[in-house]
Image (cartoon, rainbow, N blue to C red; front, side):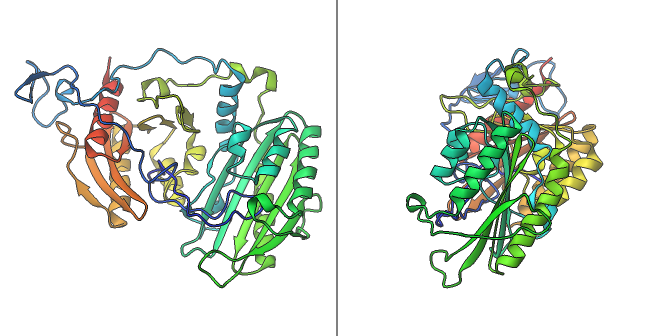
Length: 428
């Protein structure tokens, strides 16, 4: 329940075949909480001596009067229909999100794998592949007509076991087979660029077509080595990649990879890939929710933002995916639009209100404290989230059947995001 807006890198050396030992806070994606410039403004209000005044004929006390909301410089009206991706690059992002509906989450393999870590992301271009693979291996995948992918990662608490499960899509089965072979070959070689020793081949139970290797590394500050197993399986136009890291030795790591493969093969078989020539024609916003979400703007849009995720795809980013799985089903969660703010669509307003309470309870149960709610939104809830590497504020509100989530390093900015998102959803 509740997603990881940010991701924090722990700084351990990168094991072969994954982006490294990393971890995430409640706010996971690219720093403890996204730092935003606060631009104070008012939308549709009358201001006298700094005070906003209710417009004549507004809603009764206790309800939200949109004319009183401080929305900063954020837009408050929906965007025009977003249409098709328009470019292959954007189409690869959309295709990666479509694939995420068919990527097995580590918590589905082992219920103890609950702590979110990187790389949980769309892998839509070679530079992002570097989050998943060492430099030489990312370059090798790229040269074999790589199209897109998605990876999902979790670890236990305490950090005894971790698992990364990724599906990489290539232009055709021949390209995928060539990529899997080269990646497996490279995984056995020492890699001075990434400070990796040579690995040894390891047999994969019940998967004779899988190439796997194992090595040991000792995390900084520890005297106990961890054993990792990385595996590559060509399956149609896909390469299925797993990386398991454990204190328990090569056998349990290999068994975890094999169990993941068993589930992932059947899951990806239910996915219908979009022909490469048609990626630019993929609709960006089926259902129109993204056009009604405050967008992420700027020259560098973080990977995974300004996209719409289905119910299972959204689970990869949730704090408690097992609990969210049940709640999303029970409450009819249909879409998650992820822009600057985030919007969850539920069956009805009652379901949205129940989900808001769950989100807030989850954060408070982790020791985070309430802070001032959004001004002139009496039913909104805001929580200050503390983390060793950063802190920030998260605000929630309900607008009809939607749950709004806004977050920022500054409470005023989180307030403005949430207010603007409410105004946008309620605009006629």
